[in-house]
Every structure is written in structure tokens, then in C-alpha cells.
Amino acid sequence: MFEKLLEISRNGQHDEDYLTDINNLGHAYKESGRKEDARRLFLEVLENSATLGLENSSTALAAKNNLALLLNEADPGSTEVERMYEEILEVQLNHLGLAEDSISVLKTRYNLSEVYLSQERSSDAIELLEDVFSRCVTLHGPRHAIAKVCRSGLIMAYTKEGRIKDAARMLLEGELYGQGASTANILRDGNFAQVYSPYRISLTFTNQIESVVKELRSGTWINRTS
Image (cartoon, rainbow, N blue to C red; front, side, top):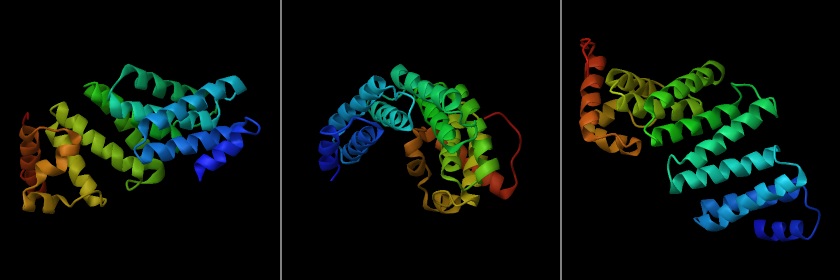
């Protein structure tokens, strides 16, 4: 379907609708595993956007974001992906005039925090995630999708920084707002490490978090360094 629409667009006028068709097809390719074809189409959108003076259009930004996500899968934390997200933010804030707490900006800043985590820049990731999380919860509530991914990112970042109690509290907060598996079930079934595997947290840390979660739930936490 998208391929037929793209062929029609290529035989007609090259405008933003044409670029949208290419980007949509690229996204479909990406989702179906045709990543090289997707990369080629996202680059085509960006090249034609520059030619048509549409480099700051929403379609060009969408293509750049799609390309950044694709590249980050192949090379997590690359400086190229970091640069792309910074460029997207610059356009969103200074050319499109989007607010700092708009959904689009929050998504981009979250994506940038993922790059920081892959670069082992946990403290930078925490600073960014805490701000995005706070803005999202204030305006959109604690169950919003961005709040959920920020919560997961903070669990990983806090753990990497040795802030085990903060990670445990965030996990319990996620349970309160229906995020993921129930903490009680995780502890009962003994699959705590399995649940944490997407966050690339070592078994040593998951054991520490598990211990702190139990203490927090029972109200027996005693302040100490982790």
C-alpha cells in the first residue's frame, strides 16, 4: 500500500505530502525488519527536505527521529545519535516554538537520556530523566506512557549510580500506578532478575534492590550506604 502511494508521489510533485509518504514507508520497513531499506528512505526524506527548504518541518523531524532510533539499535550511545537528538530538540524549541513540557519535546529528551545511559553517563541521564519525569507527571499524570519509560530509565540509572533505595522506591511507585508486573509477584515468584534484565542491571544489584524493596514494604528500612 505505502509502496504504491510512494510511486504515485514520486511521479508527481515533491512536497511535504511526498516526504510523509516516504517516511511512512520507511517506518513500515523498520517495523517489518527491513532496516537497511528503512534507513535509505529516512535519509531520502532528510535530503529532499533540505532541497525543498523543509528541513525544519514536522515530517523531516519525524524522519530524523526514526533514523536516530534505527541507528541507536545498531550502535547504542553513538555520538551521531546524540547529535541528531540535540538537533531535533533545537528545531522543536527554537524553530517550531514548542514548550519544554510538550509531549514531543519530552519524548525527544527521554530518547536523549537513553543515549546517555548507553554512554554510561548515568548522572547526566538522571538529571534529564528526573526533569522529564517531573514535567510529565505534573501535566499528564503518573500513568502517562512517558512517565512509565522515565520511571524505568530512572530505576536503571539510580542503580548504576549505587542509589539502590531510590531505585527501589521508583519500582514500588511503578507498582502503585500499574506499571509492569506487581512487585509482590516479582518477589514471590523469584524472578526479580528476569524482570530487570531489560535494564541491563547485574544480578548483584537486583539482589540489593530486592532486599531494599522488602524492607521498604515492611517499613524496616534503616538508613545506610548501599
